[in-house]
Image (tube, rainbow, N blue to C red):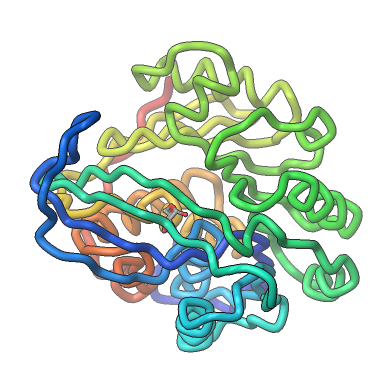
Length: 317
Ligand code: RIB
């Protein structure tokens, strides 16, 4: 990527979830049947759709988000946060019949998290196909995840495919993909657990990730990225597989690291950069994200990423 000459802002549409994150900072997460005391409770804007939209916006994209909030205080706070990031939220519906999505998150001293999501309004999201068609016109990418109903994800991917707009999917929380979704995907981004679940193989090493990525490419996506946490990521396309090593940082909270990676990658691809440039950019952005607390507050800007150290060179697999 070129840090100093970003060019015109690419347009990206995001369809996905919005949650208020209730973050409990704990020394360690409780075992089954155990009670532990938290150091505090923080309310933080989150949700995979919202986080990925914010990540794209902070990397310089013009973002149009489609989602659903409840008619409550959390919903109003989340909408205000989107507005503050310059995101077009006219596609974010307000549901008068239910509450805004909530995620209960424990974050341990190591930065490791555990997340339980109550979908609320996200579970009642219904795609406005003509509004999405408008957003897809001239867009360089559509970003999707799995925290809204699967039929709506599939419908959005179908509209993007028909509009010749590349679809970037992060199938999290993981569930089997409908057979008809695979051929609509341009880029699939999964972590090691999701890669293992989809490919049906163990993913413990970069070599395992490469094998899983190639198997998944065989189902439709032109390119597959398997993120490996602190160990970086594996990128797979028609040219083969490369391991991009991770960066050494002191993690305080890994929440939204995957969303930050995806947003940075999606914007790089939307700017016409290579898959490897996009993965490097994603690794740099995610490395900054884990050094800060919370979901959306920890997502870095393009300027912050440009000032951060470069990751190590990739290794062909
Ligand atoms: O990916 C992190 C996000 O997962 C959190 O913000 C939480 O809301 C859940 O959706």
